Length: 140
Image (tube, rainbow, N blue to C red; front, side, top):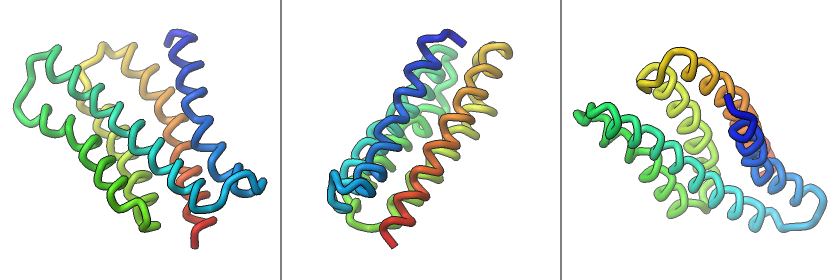
């Protein structure tokens, strides 16, 4: 895995950690922290749909894969619409896990690439899920 991919992946965690931390340090209200968190999470989730979209197009396996590739974007948008509900954090968190599982078993990358990609994603997704749980803890 290129260093830049690892670096950017880790950098992408900053908003997930910063939003609950900003609330706990009294830098943002809980409402602001929660709204910003959901916005970032929804946008990032939609990015992973594009990975599946690219895979479907590049391998010419269109069947249901293009529809599945749209799900993260649709789920992210619905979470924005219903961002006032604490359940959104659970939906987003589970969506990241579902996308990781989909990528692990469906993406058409060469074996050596999929192993390093999934290894990186497992670490990043773990932090993302923990941060979603942290926000749920703060909100309830």
